[in-house]
Image (cartoon, rainbow, N blue to C red; front, side, top):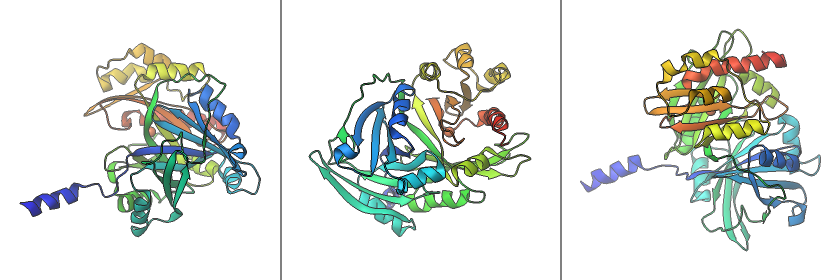
Length: 374
Ligand code: FE2
C-alpha cells in the first residue's frame, strides 16, 4: 500500500513547480515615455526604478504594477548596448517572461539537465531588504525565462531597485493577473517549442488548433497551448500556416525580426469597466462588425452581462463546457505591428475563445490590408 501511494504521489507531483508569473520585462527605446503610457492608458502604478541615480550607469528600468501584474520597462543609455541592439532589431518588445519559483537555482539546473540553453547562471542579489536568487534559460527567438526566487526579500521589486512613485496620479482599471502569454514562432517550429515546454519544464499540452480551426478565406495559422502543473502559466505557441495571403504570424515575424511574444492576455473581473476606461484613454481595439452580435447569443446562450454594453465596446463572447468568457484585443501598441494585448474576463471558461477566431482574424486582416501587408 505504501509503495502504491508513494508511486502515485510521484507521478502526480509537479516536476517543475512554478508559483506564477513574476514579471514581464520589455526592452524599449524610451522607457520614461513608455512608463507614462502604461500609467496613463492602462492604469499601472510606478513602484520602483533603477538607473544612474541608483548607481546603474548603462540602463534604466521602470517597474509598474497593477493587481498581481508587474511590468518592467528597460532602455539602454548608450548605442553599443545589448538592449539597444535588441530594440534596433525587434523594435520595442518583450525580452523576459519571468517565472516565480521557490528554488531558482534548482529550476535552472533541472531545465539545463533536460536540454534547456542557459541565458544566465544563478546569481544572488542582496540589499537591505534581503536577497533574491535569479537564473534564466532561453526560449523562442531572443526571449528568455528568468526564474525568480524571492522568498527572502521584502523590497519593492528586486535588490538594487529603489522604491519610486510618480507625480502622475494613476487610476487603475481593474487589471488583475496575467492570464496567458502567446509566442509566435517560424513555420515548422511550433512543435519544437511545444516539446521544449513539455520535456524541459514539465508542461502539459492543453489544446491544439489546426489550420481548419484558425483560418479565414485568406490566411491561416496553427496553435498549441501548453500549461504548467498548477495551470497558472499558459503559453500558446503559434506558427503560420499555408493560406492564399500572408498570415498575421508571418507579418509579426517579418516586423519583429524573428520569433517573439505576440500578446499578453490580462484578466479583469469587470471587462465592461476595464475596456470603457481603456477606450476613454485612447487605447485602440480591433473591430468586429455588428453582424457578429446578431448571431452570438445563439452560439453562447445566456450570459450575465448586458449584450448591448458588450456590443457598444466591441467585446467578444465565447463558451466552452465549463462556462463562458469575454475578450477583446487591442491593436498593436507599438509602431511595428507586433505586440498587442488581450483583455479577458473568465466566467468559468478555461479556453481561449475558439468561437471568435474567425471574426478576430478577419479583423486582423482588415488591419493588415490597411498596412499593405496582407
Ligand atoms: Fe490570447
